[in-house]
Length: 75
Image 1 (cartoon, rainbow, N blue to C red):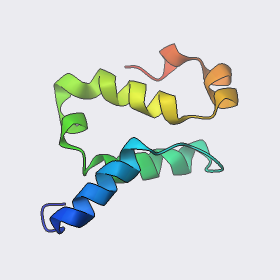
Image 2: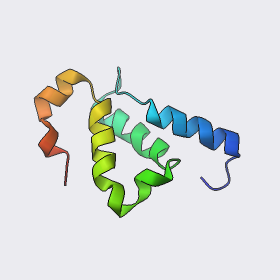
Image 3: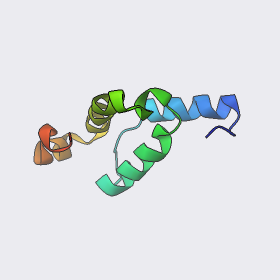
């Protein structure tokens, strides 16, 4: 991540902030989420773990959110 040009990092941060599950499987969404999360320093701290969970949950499709429930994702 530290070797990427600033403009690429910024695009990745925006992509992360706008990320939604869409047609991805939950597993593929999680992989994409984690890879883009690396570009967003706020979400890479222990203190932000809850924020990261909320961000992940908010990107899930509503049918998936309903199926798994919010409490199950948090650690």
